[in-house]
Image (tube, helix red, strand yellow):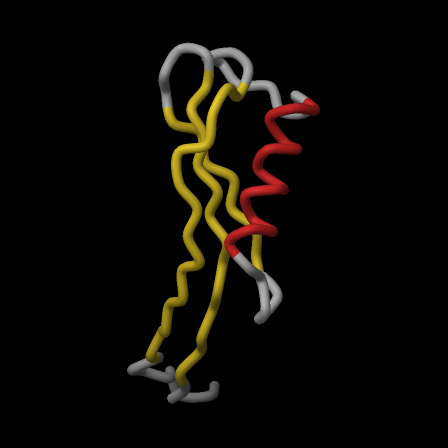
Length: 79
């Protein structure tokens, strides 16, 4: 039985219709700063590179680094 850790960077935006749009990136670098994240989010909005059903991304909503730990509690016997 083993434990695994996983980190993701979750960027949330508002689109033109007011809906939330989330982009999740695996394995963010350890020394990532809030300023770097905001700069990238501003660039994503300015370059208009993502198409959503509710229109263009128009503003930043939230940014989080999420870490999860998964504990495997059962290993099936080898056959």
